[in-house]
Amino acid sequence: MEETYLYDPNVLLKLDFHRSPAKFQPFISAASPGETWLKVRPLKDTDFDRGFLQLLSQLTTVGNVSRTQFLTRFSQMKASGDYFVTVIEDTRKNEIIGAASLVIERKFIHNCSVRGRLEDVVVNDTYRGKQLGKLIVVTVSLLAEHLGCYKMSLDCKDKLIKFYKSLGYVLLPGNSNSMTIRYDETPNLKRNTTALGVNTGGDACQTVSLHLPS
Image (cartoon, rainbow, N blue to C red; front, side, top):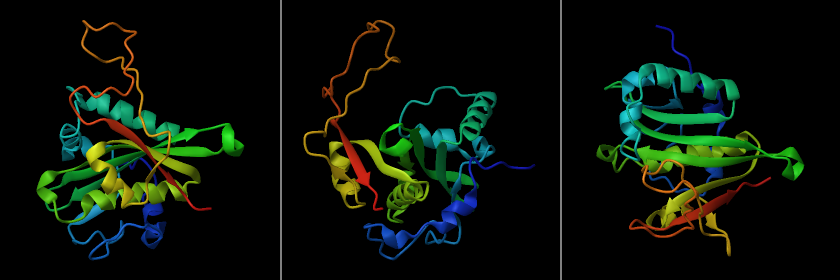
């Protein structure tokens, strides 16, 4: 069966991991992830059968997504050219064990430049100790630079700020709170309810940015 990548996998081989402030011990990269059975690559249209959605369910609610829905969304993302979902595969098990998404926002500002957003970062807990969380984040961060983004941003919980700082991300003074308006809450909530960065039991969210060198 022919498989389709979400984006060109060769671009990952062009990333210079020495440009990242992340400290890998031992040194690893997307091209050499540390184990012969690990592979860093773009999402494929066949990853529905490799547990990609099950992995995402460790991060947040996924829902009962059918194969047809998965393939439709994959095609939409590929056609837009602005989605770079990147995964780590355990080739021994034919299973996706890590993932992160780079989403490109096209701007009028900064001379019609583009901005990157880091989304949906998750690594299977059973693979701790192999630096895979660091690897997948650095991969998509360097990818954003390679694609010409003037900056990369993410939202994270307070307990993860130290981790992202070690990878080059910084909190911006006076601009460190994330604000959202949700449209997918339970039906008994009013549709015009706005969340103003309120801590509702979990850790507060923070906006963290990576300013990429010119």
